[in-house]
Image 1 (cartoon, one colour):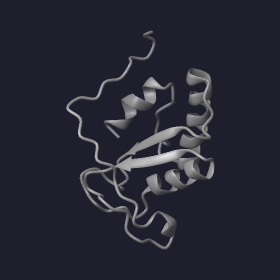
Image 2 (cartoon, helix red, strand yellow):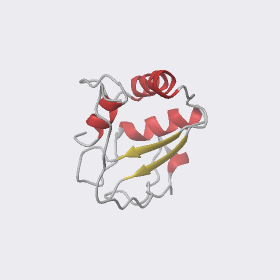
Image 3 (cartoon, one colour):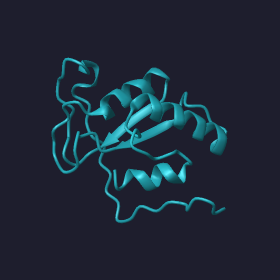
Image 4 (cartoon, helix red, strand yellow):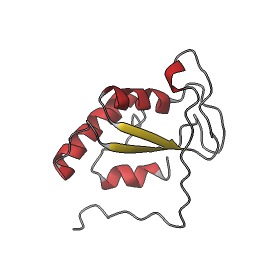
Amino acid sequence: MEVVKPILEATGLKVGRDIWLPDYVVNELVKALDMRLQKPLNGARILVLGIAYKKNVEDIRESPALRLIELLEARSACVDYHDPHVAVIPMTREHADLAGRESIVWNVDALTRRRAGSR
């Protein structure tokens, strides 16, 4: 959440206790894409940073990120994920369609963002 929170704030999403409710995130993302980029979710390229249930672990049980990926793809977004602790999504009963999907390689030395309110 420490990495994701500033990115979400930069897009104008409200960050609060319920930020990981997948439906909420999708709805707010749709609004932010439309308002800030005049772009629909359909065809948008989305990178989910971290899919494990907790940081620095490989446990994906009950991870809301898996449902988030499914919701985004159901709305025709192109979704990838990066998680150094989850190289491949294992088979689960709830998210069988995601099994075998691999984390993208994302080697960066720095991640920058535009500050909210700056042009």
